[in-house]
Amino acid sequence: MRIVVTGASGVLGTQVVHRARELGHHVVPASRRWGVDLSTGEGLAAVLAGADAVVHTACNPRRARLVDVDGTVQLLAAIATMASPPHLVYASLVGCSTSTAPYARTKRAVEILIEDSGLPATIVRSTRFHPSAAFLARATARAHRESAPAPARPVDPAWVAAELVEYVLGGRPDGCVHAPDLAGPEMLTTDQLADAVLAHDGRSHRFLRLPGLGGPARAFATVADLPGPGALLGGASFRDWLGQQPLPIRR
Image (cartoon, rainbow, N blue to C red):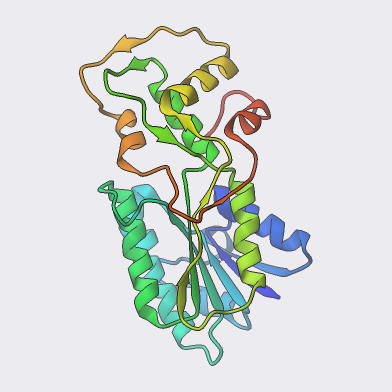
């Protein structure tokens, strides 16, 4: 199969490219590194030519309107002109339908664009990736809050990538469908995530008592890190993934 991957240089996109190539498919990376600008549509027609599927992982929380939303508009418009539209598989976020976090709302806005397009598409939501959970846990590790720690079920991006490729190989749906949520096998509280990161770093626990939830800590509470009913659980646990990471852990 000829599979186009947007955001191919990102955390998830690189894993999708690796997995699809591992299975012997022809993968075409689509990002600015390879001359494709989603926000303007530059280079899209060339990479989409002859595509059987598109795995849409492009995202940028700092430029969400330009990259995520406008980029998806450009992508859908380009696909709609094709005689045989490829199957679009979109990597979304668990909890984006109810969260008030700006990035979650952007993810939901992209979902609506895809749902309304009438194109063959599969939307796959996952919980926060291990690298992001580790980054946020490190940022909040020294903060002790009065409120109860929030539950989380972070997930290994390599496993999510493999699942996205499986949806590609499963064939095109008739219109847009939502797949079951994807989440990691281990349920942890935000305090447990912070403890695990501190232990990995070899740092001591010196908690600061804060009056409220703010800054990076708010990110844990503003996006639902728990999947819905019927979710698929898999991939490496957070602790197992953490044990394989060098220092420092990059986001």
